[in-house]
Amino acid sequence: MKDDKSVRTWMSADPVIISPSESVLDAYRKLKKHQIRRLPVVEEGALVGILTITDVRRVAPMGALSILEQNSLLANTRVDRLMTRKAITVGPQESIGEAARLMMKHKIGGLPVVEKGRVVGVISEADIFRRVIAETWSPTQRAQSAAEGEEILEVEVQAEGDVRVTLRPIRPDDVERLQSSHVRMSPETIYDRFMGYKKELAVPEARYLTCLDYDRHMALVATIRTGREEAIIGVARYHVLEAEPDCAEFAIVVSDRFQRCGIGTSLFKRLAEYAGGHGIRTFLGISHRENRGLQRLLDVAGWPYERRFLDDILEVRVRLAEETGAFVSLGALEADFQTQP
Image (cartoon, rainbow, N blue to C red; front, side, top):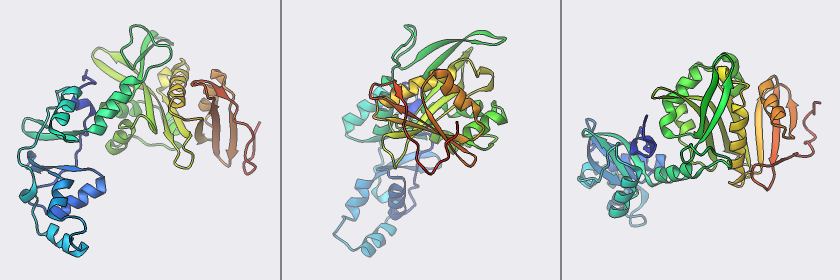
């Protein structure tokens, strides 16, 4: 099992890099495109330096030259002329605390992660903040034996007996677990979740679904353990809507063999509790018309909700009350939807 406090767990494992022979203009464009402040300079997989936005601005100060002059100067300057050759680094096995100490000591906002001389990732202040936020999640009722930021459920699975299930926030190192969970699901379960069938989760999509800000985009997972291996059997997530800052679209999926065991309901309750504590007042669920599982989950939970249909699309809304974890009816429906009994 990977240590969830290690740099390897929380680093960005596919960092944006630049080669020493490229132009500073190329580096600047990468910095701007990815909205980052530093680039590891890599040659044949090995770290040879670091280039920051401050280095770029130093060679071409804003306002001192015209845009054409700036671009010309940056295009004719190689990265290796500006980069810092002795970069401060951290190993993937080091703790998040050690990475934070190095950043504070050297007054920098990120570190290349180096293993056996090769760059394997980047750890930033934002990654450390995400780790802290994830750790502070705690359900209202948590088993005494659960670790910080976890909850233990004992559920009965037909033909298997009691199974120990852990609920916790999703982590960046869950990429492979999430992909494995997806391929084990039936086409029907996948269709209910994604309103379409996809055989597998591509790496970029899996990374997006596991690397969250734990505020506007949050996800909890249900996991079981077989020996030393941990497997994801359920996911509940929300994503705040740009047009409605106090409303979040939610989605829940549970592996077929663990459905109707209360796992989906438990995930949803904890997700709603977390959302309520982050200023979210409404949960919005969108699925296909025949998704009985979504409606059954809310019926079993006993929460009043509104549903409406537009052609083959089902929309459900659950309004979170001011008290975290409580629910009230949404109220009247908009006139442009046909209400179904």
